[in-house]
Image (cartoon, rainbow, N blue to C red; front, side, top):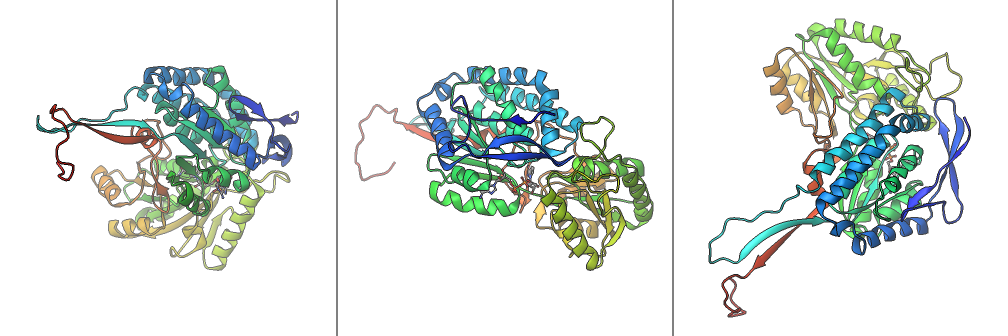
Length: 493
Ligand code: NAD
C-alpha cells in the first residue's frame, strides 16, 4: 500500500503542524510504517481552541435554531454511510482491529449522529410550580462552550462520535485530540464535516501525543468542558489540569469486568459470550470480560469448552473476512501483557492455554488467546487491566461468593451474568457495582443506552439521551411579575 500523509483539521482548514513535525503510524499487522501524521505544536492546539472559541462566540452554530443543528447532524450521518468500508479499512490498518468490527463501528458512527440529530431540539429546562405571587421562575439549558475531547486508540471513530455528536447537538464547538496510535481514520472522517458544510471551527481535530498536545488542550483557559476516554493513569494527569481552567470533566476509563457463570447456564451460549467478551478485538476493549468467575458444578466443563474454542480461533490479517483475532495495537502493549502474565504465573497462576506469540507470525504484534486459572484475586492478571486477550478464571460455590468476587476490583465498568434463572440473574445484577451489565449475552451495544463506569472506571456517561445534558449548562431565571418596584433592599423575599 502507498505511504499516506494526513493533515489536521483546524478552523475548517487542512493543516500540517506549525513546525512541520510529524510522526509515523505503524500497521500492527506487519509493523510497516504506512502513514505520517502531524505532531501538533502548542501553537497548533492553541489555534484549534481559539477557532472553536470564535465559532462559539461569534459564529452561527450556537445561535442557529436547534432543529437546523439537527439537520446538520443528519447530513453528517448521511455523508458517513457510503464511507464505512473505507473508514473501517483505515482504522483496521492503523490499529489491527478486525475490518468486520471497524466497518460495523463506522456504520454505528452514522447511527450516533442520527440519534443526536433527533435530540437537538428536545433539550428542555423547566418551570417549577409556584404561587401566583412568586416571581416567575424557570430554567433553561444552554451550551457549555468549547469542549475538549481526548480519545484512546481503540474504537476511536465511534468514541469520538459519542463526544462530538451530543456536543454539537447542544450547540457547542469542540476540539478532539486523536490518539497518537490511531489518528488516520479520524482525520479521514473529518472530511465529512467539510462535506456537510459545518461552519469553520465548530469541529477541530488535532493529532499528537499526551504532551504537549493533550496537556495543552486540557489545560487551555478557553476550554469549558473536557470529555476524556483512556486509561486511569492518564486520567490522573488530566484531572490536575482542570484546577486551572475549572473545566467540567467526565472520565471514561478502563475496566476489569467480571463474567459470572452459574451452574444452570446454557454452556454453548455462555462459551460464545465469554469469547466475545475477551477475545473479540483481541481483548482491547474497555468492556472486556477479563475476569471469569465460574460456579463449581460447571467449572471443568466450561473450561474445557473455552480452551477448545480459544485454540480454534483463527488469528491473522485483520483485513481478511475469515480472521477472528488480529494483532495487538502496539509492541509496547504486547510487552506489557507478557510481563504481567509472567509475573502472575510466577505468583501461582496456572496457564491453561496460550500465553505466547503465535509461531506462524514473525511480523506483527500477535498474541495467542490466553486462559489462566487463578486461586485468588491478588494476582496482576486479575487485578490489572491488561487490555489484551487474557482471561483469568476463578471459581465460586454460591451466589454470595460470586457477588463478592465480582465486586472485588478497583474497576467497575461492565460485567456479564450467565444463568437460566432470570430472577437470580437480576438479583445478582442489582448487587454487582458496575456501569453496564449484560445478562446471557455480552458486548451488545446501542447509541440509545449509556455507558460509563463506577469506581476507578470513571465518572460521567456517554451515549443515550442523558449524555446531551452533560454538554449543557443549567441556567435559572427569576422574573418579577407583581408590577411592584423593588422595595426594601435589605429584606429578602
Ligand atoms: P491512554 O490513557 O494511554 O491514552 C488516551 C488518550 O490520552 C490518548 O489520546 C493520549 O494521547 C492522551 N494523553 C496521554 N497523556 C495525556 C496528558 N498528559 N494529557 C492529556 N491527554 C493525554 O489510553 P489508550 O492506551 O489509548 O487506550 C486504552 C485505555 O482506554 C484503556 O484503559 C481502556 O480501558 C480505555 N478505554 C475506555 C473506554 C470507556 O469508554 N470507558 C473506551 C475505550 C478505551
